[in-house]
Every structure is written in structure tokens, then in C-alpha cells.
Image 1: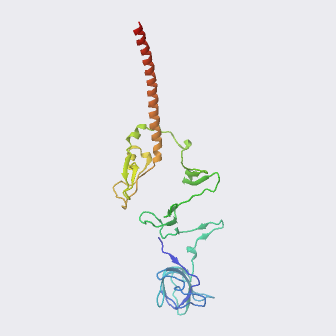
Image 2 (image 1 turned 45 degrees about the vertical axis):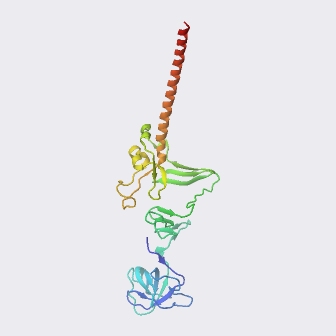
Image 3 (image 1 turned 120 degrees about the horizontal axis):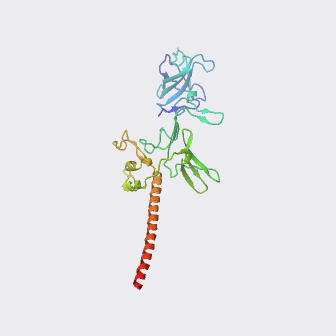
Length: 317
């Protein structure tokens, strides 16, 4: 996470500092209706963006910089980064005289407003958080939202409904689209009454590779267990065990040697929906067995009926 940059309205002070060192600030604003940093509510230790000029009307020497403000008598601003000026990106070597310092927002720290109404941000964009990844492992109950260059997004909330996705169409539509390298791989769609979670299943995208073995289902081991985090009871599977039987349903994690929270910990996960083809194959196999058994029973019943009739005819004779 970067360091917050502070600014304030109508801040204008003077300095008589010479050389390239720390600016010592005047104890009062440079003109009526202007303010000092402390009067503008800038806390000591804050990083600020400043412009320093030798004249407010016809400057010949100037400096754009970021510095660290320290309250005191006198208050100071320590140069932290020279952004530009009459001496390029090196600190200006000020001669004797009075300079004016005011707070500003430098162009490289400013979001870009584009002609189509969009807003471009060069760095991480955070809303209601100081964390790049609010709510993630190691951050705890930090709340807020952030977007990170490269495409990662984070959202964390303590409310009962942290995410509300509304499709403002009477007939419903796509609430979310999922793509990989520009190709659509899944959607979340809504109607007026229901929500569907869809993944790619188009036969035109697939090459057939045989049937699913229904016997695999019997090798899975459904379990009752408690979650270590809170002791809550649950039923389900262990992903590592399922992987040994039906790896298509599992996203492997680490080598299973690092404990939870360790530096190499990567959780094993599984998609229970991926077991559906196996369940269907098993039900179909059982249905065929039942049909075959039913047919055999009918044949046996027919044979038994015929045999009973023959026995009855023998008794009559």
C-alpha cells in the first residue's frame, strides 16, 4: 500500500530556507484569507504535494515536490521527491530571499477524466479502505473495495447483503459474464423470478473422449466433519480424496504439507457440480440394471406361469 497524500484548501505560507535542505515554514499564512498547514487540518507526519516559487507573479525559480510535513516552531517540510522545476528533478538550490509554498495536486497524482465520461486511475483505486485487498487473508475484518492494476478486484463488507446485482430489464438478462482471453466461458443470468449459473457446455467446443465410468461414484467417500475455524458441523467430501478418484472435480492446492496460514498454504477446492455427470452415469447404469432385472423377472414369471399350467395338466391326467 502506498502513502496517503494530503492537500488542503487555500494553504499559502512562506520560507526563507536557503540551499537544498528542509523547508522551514513561516508561522502565519502568506496573505489574508489564506491558511497555514495546521490551520487547514494537515496532521504532522503527513506527506503533501507542494509548489515552491520565488514570486507569485513572475517566478524565475520554482520546484514541484512531495514532502513530509512536521508541525512545530518552526514547522517544516522535508523534501521527499522532486517531481520537476527550474532545476529539473533535482532540488533547487535556493539563494537568500523569500519563497512561497502552497499545497496542490500534481498531474501525475490526478485521475484522468476522459471525453467519453470514463475515469482512468494509474494506481490502486480504493473505496472506504486503506488496504489493497480488504477482507483477504491476513487483513481480517477490513471492509471496503479496491481495484488493482492488472485486473484484481476486492470487495469486503459486514452488511447482510454485501453485493446487490440488479438487472434492470423486465425479462431479465445477463447479471455477469465470465471470459477467458476474450472468449465467453460462463454467465450468471436472471429472469423475473430466478437466477441461473451457467458454464460453457457447447458440444461444438468439445471432442468426445469416452463415457464416464459409473463405478467411480462408489469409490467416493461422503463424510461428516467439523470446520476447524469455528467447529461448525457439515457434510461433504475432502478434495484430496475426490482428486484421487475423479480429478475433474478438483482444483489442486499445495502439496498438503503446509499448515493453514503458512506461507505456502494454497487451499484445495472442488466443484460439486462437476460430479453431476458421474451421478447421472451411475443412475443410468442402475436404471439399466433395474430394467434388465425387470425384464428377467417378467420372463421368469412367464416361465413360472407356463410351468404351473403344465403341472396342473399333469395332475388332471
